[in-house]
Image (cartoon, rainbow, N blue to C red; front, side, top):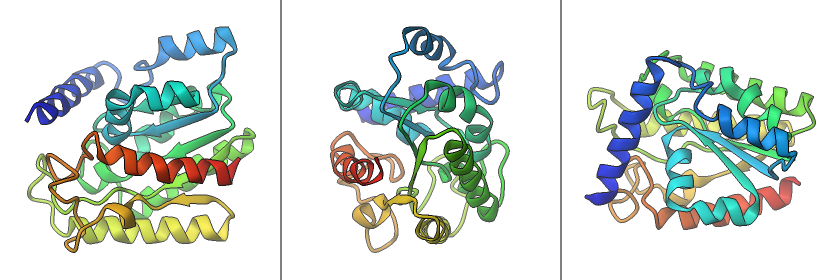
Length: 223
């Protein structure tokens, strides 16, 4: 329950922040400026939504020890990430970027787009990264069979799986490393088991250890 309360608090803070800064461009502005001024650029930037944001919250040492940088914002869709991609990724001059997007698009959060457009948004982020000498790494959307904050959304698990299959095909066709969290975490109902999540959608602190093992292998392969 304590972990679930933390998730709710962080998501609420982010939602209130969007009233002034809908795309989240100011969330990491000060830290981005600090990094740029110091020229201590990260090896890898992780851009995403609450799953990425909570990852940095629960496992800060994973990021600091590996000289990684977390740029997750709760509630964000792939479109919002695309808009802030230059400020939160390109400007930090990492060797690689790990892109995880789509959960909130499927949940019909702010500025919802179709599953096909989610894939196009991620493709565009990959192209921007490549154009700036940054190696893109595509993450699957982690499994989720229902959204606690959007219980009316149907066929969540299958929609996520369909998007992931499209992302995997694109990655394979374009020599981009793909991190398949979904296959490692999903249960028979295409969701996150109770042992891995407090709400069925967000990984718990221990589940991130599984994801870290997978993404470290992907980063090694990519760069």
